[in-house]
Amino acid sequence: GTLYASLLNPVTIGPSTSPYVKWNGSAWSCVGTGLTESGACVAYDSRRSRLYAGGYNGATIYLRYWNGTAWTVIYTGAGFSSGPNAVVYDSVNDLVYYGGGFNGTGGFTSNVLEYNGTTLRSLTPWPGTQFVSDVSVDRRGILCAVQGYTDRHVYFWDGNGWVESSITTDVISSGSGSYGGSGTYDQYRDGFWINAGGGMMGGGSGREVALLQTRGTARTHYDFTITVSVNPPRVKAR
Image (cartoon, rainbow, N blue to C red):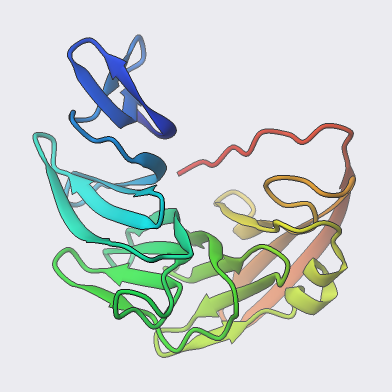
C-alpha cells in the first residue's frame, strides 16, 4: 500500500515541490508538483483511484484531486474563516466529504460539503455555529461531523438532515480548553473515537475521550478521561 500525507509547508523532493507527499515503503516523494498552498487533509478514493486533498493559502481554500498523473481543481475560492480541516471517502455510498469553515462563503450553506465525483454540494442546513474540525464515516456509510473550537458538538447526517448526538451534552461540553474535536472511526470496535476537551491544540490537562458506537438508530457512548502533561501529536488514520 501507499501512505499519503498533507504538510503545512510544501516540500521539495528531487525535482518536485508539493504540500502532499506519499510513502511507498522505502522513500517519500511528492504528489505532483507546483502547488504552493498549505496542505490540510487527504483521503484516498479506491474506486476511482483518486487522492482527494484540501489546502489553503490565507483565506483562500483549494479542494482538488490527483488521478495519478495530474491535479484537478474541484473548487477554489477566497474569504473563508477556516480552511478545509478534514476529508474522508465513503466507500459505501461512493461519496467524498470535506469538513471546514465553508458556511456563508462561496455560495455554501454548510460546513460539510459532499462531492459525488462530479458535483460539490452543501449538506444543509448546517445546525452549528462554528467550523467542522473533523469528519469520519463508519462501515454503514454513516457520516459523523465534529464541530470544533469553543462550541463543541457532534452531528450525524441521516441523508436528509443533521442529527445531534447526546454525546455533546454528556461528554464534550464537560471537556476543558478551546479547540475541540477529532473523530476517527474504529472498525474493530465499530464506533467513533471522539476527542473532546483540550482537542487538537490543548488548553487543559483533563481530556474527555469517548467511544461513540452507532448501530442502526441506537447510539451508545463510553467515556474516558485522559490526563497528559504535554500535548500529544494528532494522528489520523484514513
